[in-house]
Image (tube, rainbow, N blue to C red; front, side, top):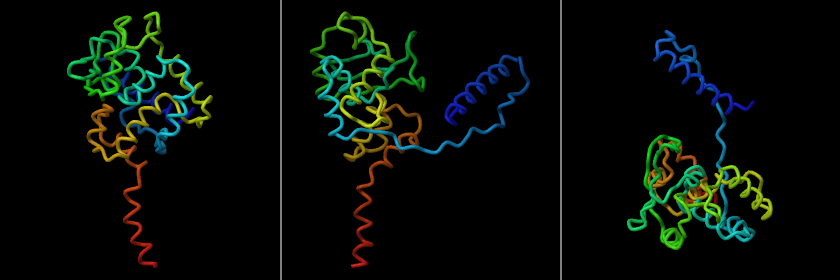
Length: 223
C-alpha cells in the first residue's frame, strides 16, 4: 500500500491504543514512540479558468452545474455540500454555517462560517426548497457523495480534462484562484477551514508570478 495509507492506518491504531490507555486497559501505547512515514509533498491539482469553462460546457444538467459552481465559489468539501441543510443557510446575512450535527461531523470537528458571494446568494434565493437539504435530486432525495464525485469525473473526461482532476480539485481551484488574486493567506485559511496555516501554504507555492520581477534583476545584470 502507499505511504499515505500506512500513515492513515498508523494514526487510527495509535488513537485506538490511546483509548485503551485512557480506559485503564493498557499501561502504555506501543505506538507512542513510532514515527510516521515521510510522504513527498505533491502539488494540489487545480483547474485553469479555461478548463473550468470546458467542464461547465459539457454538463447537461442545470442542477448539477449549480452544484459545481457552488463548490468552487464556497470551496466547501463534498461531504459538507451534500450534508448542507437550509437551517445552516442565512440568506439575510448571506452566510453559510458549516456545523457539526447528529448526522454530520466536519473534518476538523470545528464549525466555521462562509460568506456568500453575490451569485451564490442569488442562486440560493431562487432555489426551490424540496427538503431540509439544500442540494437534492429533483424529487427531493439527498445525494450520495460517491455519485456526485463519479459524475464529475465523467464530465471531466468528456471535456478531455487531465486525469488528476477530481471533485475535490474544485476546492483546490478556488483557493489557488484567490491567492493568484492577492487574497491574504490567512483569509483563505479561514474559508477552507484549515486548522494550521501550513496546510494552506501549499496553495501559495503554485503562484510564483510575483517572484518573476525580482529574478529579472539577474537578467539585467547579464545584459
